[in-house]
Image (tube, rainbow, N blue to C red):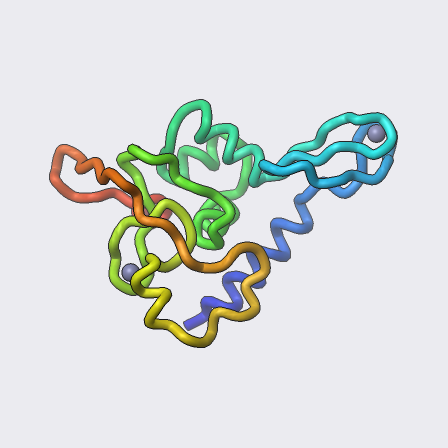
Length: 155
Ligand SMILES: [Zn+2]
Ligand SMILES: [Zn+2]
């Protein structure tokens, strides 16, 4: 299905773009969460693509992947990848969600809803970041045309 290659490609690209050294003093960075890193030596903070996207969503709310990409400068494949790999959560109450790859219901992050994950016993290994399981939103907001819109699925 090509999914494994997608994930590997995503991980590779993400890691290539991730900050490795402090841009001020070249010191080593420690991950402090939320896509932010702090320099051991001077305390300067760096941000990775995950942090950029997360900050964007925190500030402006969820948006189609293409809009997030335009505004953060993060390549669209990475925006999509992060949503799929469960690195990014769609905030509760959003009108835009990711959909479960098996049953198509809305989830806030990950690739499969909790129901579907229970039916899958294998092939979940090798996921680098988080488990595939997502969380269903408590409230689904329907758009005017009555259909759900999903991040990354309407190109
Ligand atoms: Zn530094
Ligand atoms: Zn499902």
